[in-house]
Image (cartoon, rainbow, N blue to C red; front, side, top):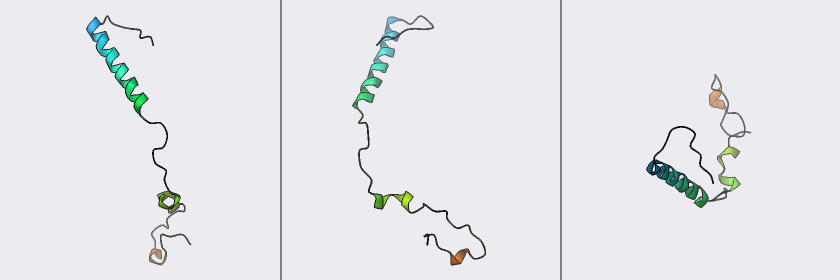
Length: 69
């Protein structure tokens, strides 16, 4: 990995601090798991309930229900 200073003239201490931050961030990204940690059961998925549009309130809204027929 190469780091190039584009602007300014950092001191060695400033450059070391910036490098420490970059390396710590890279180590944290490498340590995080990639992919799903838990699988979601289709039965508990809330999107299966709201697949259809909800009826709009109106004169006869009390006769309709949320659950699609």
